[in-house]
Amino acid sequence: MRLDVLSIFPEYLSPLQLSLIGRAQEKGLLDLGVHDLRDWTHDRHRTVDDTPYGGGAGMVMKPEPWGEALDHVLGAGAEAPVASHARPPAAPVLIVPSPAGEVFTQATARELAAREHLVFACGRYEGIDHRVIDWAAERAEVRMVSIGDYVLNGGEVAVMVMVEAIARLLPGVIGNPESLDEESHEDGLLEYPVYTKPAEWRGHEVPPVLLSGDHGKVARWRRDERLRRTARVRPDLLAALPAGVLDAHDRRVLAALTEEREETAPG
Ligand code: SAM
Image (cartoon, rainbow, N blue to C red; front, side, top):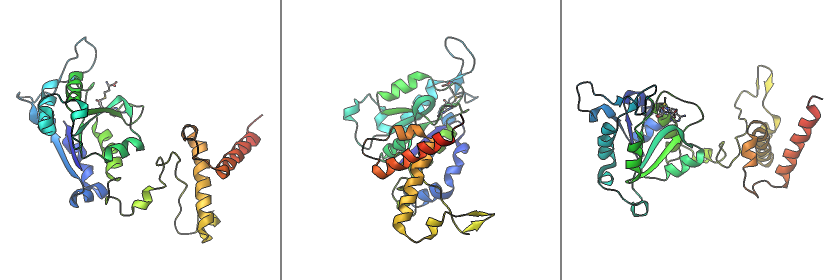
């Protein structure tokens, strides 16, 4: 997979050289290019921002450096408008981090992990002149994506979050791909709690079933814990599960949890 990141703080992205994502680049699984947006400015001060039309606080990122930078990273795709149905499967997807975008989820990560070329445009100040997004949408698939309902100073941290979530799904990046199967958000449930040695630590014991060696019981316990944890922490996820995902045993576990809660509720 090819990734291009455009930013006025390219050094912000340096943690992407570390750990599994760094190793994925060494192994040739990931080809990451980080570009300084100011390389596409032409004035002495390398200006990338200007005051907003209509007035108001803050500055807006100017369209010209973005246009030239995108001409460069989108390559031939940027030359003329192309209808979405006529774009080749390897065509880049332009991802514009924004608190006003669709929310990034594990499903978004899976969708983007299947693409060949992702381009990330990190905004700063009050964001990028919107004509850049409109222009790019005529040439490439454009996704404005938020990593959550809060406001960051810039898109760099959001891009690191997205790149890490996407890249770990690529074949070969995680040593044991089975470890992805039961992870939180893969099938709508959160993961069960995990434990390692020693079996007793500061008076806290590992749940005995995990020491039983009975794989069936361990699997059932883990599923029950996933259901209980999801019901307690993220009932919205349970409510959104497609029909047929929960079997009769699952429903009994959830009903027991509801009863427990009713019994312990004050009043
Ligand atoms: N004025 C914008 C608004 O209210 O929607 C916020 C701009 S923010 C200060 C500057 C940049 O940070 C944005 O252009 C975007 O790149 C990034 N950013 C901030 N919060 C984000 C979030 N929740 N998800 C993704 N990117 C975010």
